Image 1 (cartoon, rainbow, N blue to C red):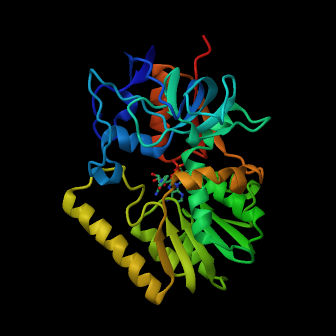
Image 2 (tube, helix red, strand yellow):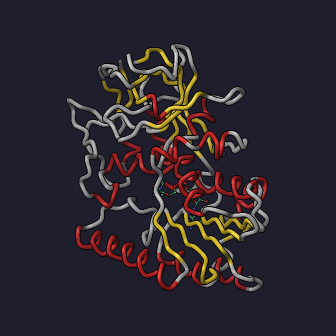
Length: 350
Ligand SMILES: NC(=O)c1ccc[n+]([C@@H]2O[C@H](COP(=O)([O-])OP(=O)(O)OC[C@H]3O[C@@H](n4cnc5c(N)ncnc54)[C@H](OP(=O)(O)O)[C@@H]3O)[C@@H](O)[C@H]2O)c1
């Protein structure tokens, strides 16, 4: 089958201009897998990091490297129709609409007409959900689920979400506002303030107006949780202006803005990881707590209960066609970090 893939590792910042039609073989279905006729995939910043080899700052952790014989087909988040099931799979039948995550990173992701994936990583697509919505509930939902687990009891707490209009932030604002928090405060640019309010935020702060920590500190009585979906030392500095001593700072990227966007020399990587370890250890002695969050398979398995049953839906920024031009545009947009929620690639219907 033909798919849009990469045959070499693109230079950093150039993934969008490196897609080509390549011929790939349909992978052999394993016992614990399902095969899907793909209907939609959603992009994650991590797709770019995998393509460019900058995930984990560039530490080789089994990242698939593209070459002409073995092209890389991106796409961790996928929604489609089951068209074959492995011998050991009882959860799904042929014809079931499902959505899920292809992980660990494989050479053939969801940006293909067909793909295979472990059944355990898939959920039935809820009735009345579109394929696009299903695709948008992948990595972002698992990560939002992981963060909610780290926060624990949120009732009557004050919570700030940085990057509130992003894929993960927009799920968190909705979830927190439904879980009985005292106040949800979203931080985003002015263009997204009304959207973040519509998701349930009690207050929205435009970070371009003035440092958001200063804006909130003016009449703040202390914040219990700050969830950082963008990273950067400046974010942590602002957070520390507001957090109660027994508060909790939960970050997805640590001290580097959108960690993985750039190649990181080994010594810098070492510094970053040392920083994270020290912060996590000492913050538990002195407060406020500092935690680096990451989504795991169990977090993904609990999203049904934590998010879907509570009618928390993804925000969709835009939907692109499965053409070389559109896929390039979709990745360019993702790289800009200006997307309001998920960017979707719709499968071809011909
Ligand atoms: N640790 C993990 O396991 C894990 C898992 C998944 C993702 N991640 C990482 O988490 C990060 C967020 O992922 P995502 O998928 O949610 O990203 P995303 O959807 O691509 O984020 C885009 C959003 O970021 C916002 N943004 C950009 N600069 C900002 C700033 N200075 N202040 C506040 N908001 C800003 C934009 O809003 P405005 O246009 O309004 O600024 C936009 O809505 C990524 O770096 C990703 O790699 C980590």
